[in-house]
Image (tube, rainbow, N blue to C red):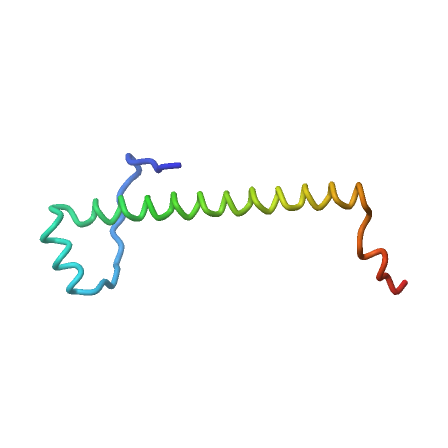
Length: 81
């Protein structure tokens, strides 16, 4: 996780709530750096949640495969073929 802090900077246009920007500027001397840190944390959190969801899905598939191997598929009892 993390990001390349040495990567080149790029100017972007954003529309933000004016009151929030004013309040944030009173708290932080470098709004761009603060937004960059918050964005990095948001991305790390989103990627971690996605990885956990993928792990849970893989775990469920493994458990389902084990169940089918041991007991067979319930779908076989209801096949119309």
